[in-house]
Amino acid sequence: MRTQVVLLAVLSLILSRPAGAAGGDGAYSVANIPASLLKNAHVVKRMEVERFDLKNPGEAVYSIKYALTILDEAGDDYAEFAVHYDKFQSIRSIDATLYDANGKEVRSLKARDIQDKSGVSENNLIDDDRMKEHNFYCRNYPYTVEYSYEMKFTGTMFYPFWMPLQDEHVAVQSSQFIFTCPADYQFRFKAFNYTGQPVQTQEKDRKVFTWQVGNLPAVTLEPYAPELRFLTTYIVFGPTQFEMQDYKGTMETWADLGKFIYALKQGRDQLPENIRATVHQMTDNEPDPYEKIRKLYEFMQKNTRYVSVQLGIGGWQPYDAGYVATKGYGDCKALVNYMYSLLKEAGITSYYTVIRAGRGRKSFLTDFPASTFNHVILCVPVKQDTVWLECTNQTIPAGYLGDFTDDRYGLLVDENGGHLVHTPRYGLRENLQVRHIKASLDEGGNLQVQANSTYDAEQQDDVSGLINTLSRDKVKEYLHENLDFATYDISSFDYREKKGRLPSVDESLAISVSNYATATGRRVFILPNVMSRARLRLKEDTARQYDVVLDYAYRDVDTVEISLPAGYQPEAMPPDVDVSNPFGRYRCSVRLLGNTLYYYRLREQYSGRFPATQYNDLVRLLELVYKNDRNRVVLVKKD
Image: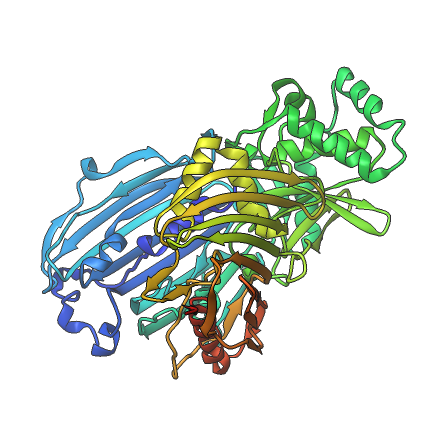
């Protein structure tokens, strides 16, 4: 599904932009940068002016000028210029100049220096996205690059946003955003971390709004901090009336936006006669609605494949169901529309639902209607329940979403418009890993391991993807690279998937580990935690600024039985541990009964947003887990 690829790329920090005075008069000399902006910075945005001139509901001109001083090698990536364009956004001009540390001009951009290349994403088969690129490749630090360019918009469904400080280790000396529109046009905006109101003026028959900030020091992002956009100045803009390739819409409410999206898909649900007959053959004698959905969903999965084609309005408008039935492929919009059509033929109501998939689930603004979506899924109400269908994945079971689209808002669309819905959340009880290990240690310290693990819900996502996309040889290669043993061999491995609305994967591994235990004289040192050692450690921070955000909750349970050679008794055993705090819980214990060592481990991580003052509690919990996961048992040979 086409999204704001163009605008997001244009507004990325690499493309930051300024205006104001040119740098040829020495204005860009590094000596003119306040000392406070050099601290923790690799880049200083010297100036930036963005101007968005809305000519009418279907046309706009976007002008950008900016200058970046690159202080060291770590800032080089920001000096690169890369602007995307397509059928709806064209680039009308580009100018660029390179300055030295004293603000003296070194060279300017030549037309032949601009590279024009395809901007097609690796996720898309066909796309009309292209990009202009340039890089001065300067390495004499510090240096300054100044760029200015202008874009014409012939579709206004997406407005730019303004975020002067778009990355860590980048300071902002001056940034300004100007929005102009006809006097009788009502645009929308929402501001975060901006003091006061924009300056409003009049230019003939046009309204002019200006926002400006300056002297923003560089920030260093803290572990598990909220998204940067909500920690600094950030303003989003949105249309009321808009046009896209002869389609007109409004966006004052979510219902309005839903009507526009519904109009794009209306009348595209007609199936060929042979497919209609197949639908009835599969479902007419099935009394269970969920089973009908499952059968049709698996039929769709087996007979189609995901191919992304994003051309013009086709970036938002699905292929009709007959096309998908005949060709056997489609993008997310087309496959969802096809599945919708199959269910409709079976007498089952479902709803086309646009969503922001992947990262950014927490940044969705429920009170600001905007087309920030990049994906489509299908919502199927069943009695008092709801079945969600991800139609681009050929192996995921009906009713399960996974972390790509779970726990976030989407816009459900029908003939009356759209309204926000929230997708299922998989938490502590669902995201479960249970592992039982039986192992045998010989006199040489070598360990034979039989590990049986079950992964549920999002804990199985990566495992399922592994076994469904890689050959058996590649899976074994992956296991050899990722198991946490020094020297080992995998004797056998096997996986079994259990399809369902909460899917799981059973894993069976037989592993031979050389020199697992360390022997010194009569003593032997054994690590009872065979396969579940945590790796994450954090440093305490007494000056933590931002809240702690943990999105993922899970539970791991491990039981281990290690058969030992006869004649050993304990000399040193780790103490039992049972610790919990707002971030999670950790339990572990070890016992020697006869010639068998028994180990138990429970690790729970909770999700939520926690105050910065509790950050060190998280640090201490992680440190406790890390150390206790590596505690060894010391056994001594009896005389």
